[in-house]
Image: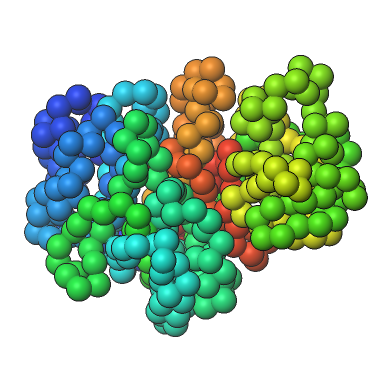
Length: 393
């Protein structure tokens, strides 16, 4: 059964004045909603508005009679209105006619397992045909592995996407949402997890577009402990890594560590992992997430051409799955190292999305990491664009 009442709209503002940007955003949303009350508003704002972050989401919620507002800080916002780049921006997506359970969980660093279990158990049991869980975890909590592990064990294969809020020059990121102790008040915190669980009579379609190209022959992880890969092909990991680097990078290890990743072929798609540090005693390589012994990896390099090609390919496949149904709304989590820093110009991804799928309300934020289901498993990505669509059944 279709639900024509399911409806969404977006608004954006590029004003440098935070108060003016908030007023314009609320005014545009009210005009588009025409008296409808949203079940949730998804809000993103760039670091240039940091001075207003503490009360921004709460003020927006009050403008709509206490509607929950969830979201986070970002270095850039994208939508069908275009893409911001190194400039102030605020963007919001208001969703109507879909059940929304919003939340804000503090102190993700010390409570990842408990938070993951609680959310997974709560939402997996929701009696609904359509489900989508959106997560925005703080970028500075360290590894997301405990949260992902707990969610996976409880939430199951239901649709889930997310992105870690990004920042520029603040030294921390912000998350907005209502806390469990006070559901009627939206708060701003750092170090936590904000999100919303959407449920109803809809289908969720998810695609992941890569931003890196694997190069060279595979290497096998022959020894690893936790997040440290100690050996590759039975050689010290650092030695094996340097031996595979392109000529200009062999003598510039800091540059190589920032621009060359490790790619893991899951059979359903590619995962990329950054080398974040060196383990001097063992000549090991330290990653943000564990890589198990026996895993086949390849070096991967950021590549604008392959990123564009993969985006076009994934969107064409997504268009086929939409099959002419109305797209109610979409959310796009894209790595902050895509966009102009990868393509050399703005609006590449936004143009591809609009060109393939047409005019529908969607909002996106630049992230430090992206999260999505891939091949039935939940993964953390880098340099990807993760697009989730809510479409009519």
